[in-house]
Structure formats: C-alpha cells, structure tokens
Length: 258
Image 1: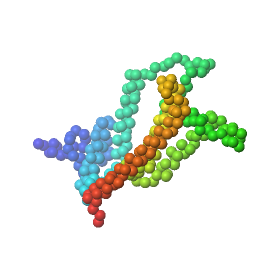
Image 2: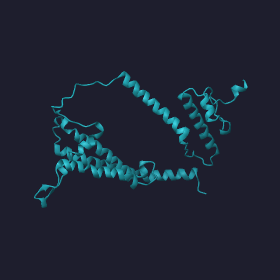
Image 3: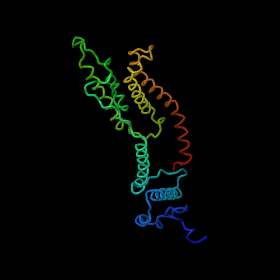
Image 4: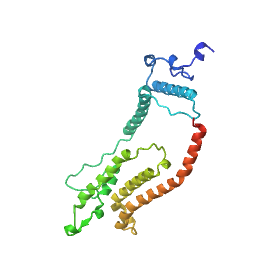
C-alpha cells in the first residue's frame, strides 16, 4: 500500500474518513477540484459526518447531543441538492407528460358545476354555513347579514385562531402525548378541513346517499371534528402518565443529576 492509498481522501475519490479541521482543505482548494454539485454534495456529507463523530466522542453525555450546523456551506449545499433533484423531476414530468389543453372557454355560458382549486375546498365549504346565520328577534326575525356575507365573515375567526396558535402555545413539547390539548386541537382542525371539503362537494354525491339528508350531513360536518378532538385528547391524556414516567426514568438513568 502506498502513502497516497493510506491517507484519507477528501476529493470524493476515496472512502476514508475526512481528516480533522486543521488538515481539511480550504473552501478555495476544494472549489478548484470540484466537478459539479455531486462532488460538492459528497464533501458536505463527509464533512458533516466527521464533525458529528468528533462531537459524539468529545461529549460527556451517554446519549447523543443535539447537533447544529451552520447555514453555509452545510445547509446551503444540502438544500441545493434536494431542490435540484425535485426540480429535475418536475422538468422531466413536464417534458414527458405535458398537460392536456381543453377547449376554449366560452365567456357567454356558465358551467353547471363551479369548484375552486382543491386546497380551497374547505373555504368553499364555509360559504355554505348559512344555516348558522342567526335570525334576530329585534330585527323582526330577519338576519343581521346576508348568507353570502356571513360565509365570508366566518373565515375571520378560523384564520385568526390559526394565526394565534403559535403565540398561545409556547411550550417545548416534541410529541403529541406531551401536549394532549394542542394535539387534540390540531386533530380537530384537520378533521374540520376534511369535513368542510366534503360539505363543499356534497351536491356532487348527494344522490348516492339517500339516507343522509342535507341537514344531517351539515351537522356531521361540525360534530365529527369535535368528537375526533375529544377522543384524541382522552387517548393522549391516558398515555401521558406512563409516557412521562418512562421518559423521566430513561433521562435520569442516562443523565443523572449532579
């Protein structure tokens, strides 16, 4: 074995361990012999693996410490490689499977079924919440606002709640079982968006469910998310005691208090 074969390689042609920082080539030296994004990506992963190995060997803890890497060049190279991969897939699909262009739209006729994009179905379902629009006796049984205006106004509290969640939940929980309430609230929101999506599409499959009336389907659209949230909270609350006991026992076994 020659001296060149026994030394670790950092140019991507060898399989040795990346040398420490004081022996690692500078960024300019690596750039001079770089041959594209693949070589640069290989060097990034090898460098990150070496730093991770050194930190674990120098650590006093039994379990692995949480590591963080700088944005340049570590995160930048990794994100660039991932983005390039998916952009390449999109370009490949666009070239091999071009979208079909339908007929020319006729502005003088209105389609029989008008639907928004799929990610706005939940918003379209809120426009059909006119049964919740209250009638005030002080106005002679008339509604305070029209059904269309009420459907738009309902968006305010829901979007406002979504915007306030990051400010209200300031805990450091990393798993749903550690915060059952917020986990249940998230499940409720996901189920509500799903049921509102079905409510927006109800007129398309109403004939296939003769036993389910419009009022019953409307009530289920708001009852099922609440039931799902309550069940989630109950299950996570029942699991929390055993989970925290095992977590604390493992924590103090690996990291005894000083």
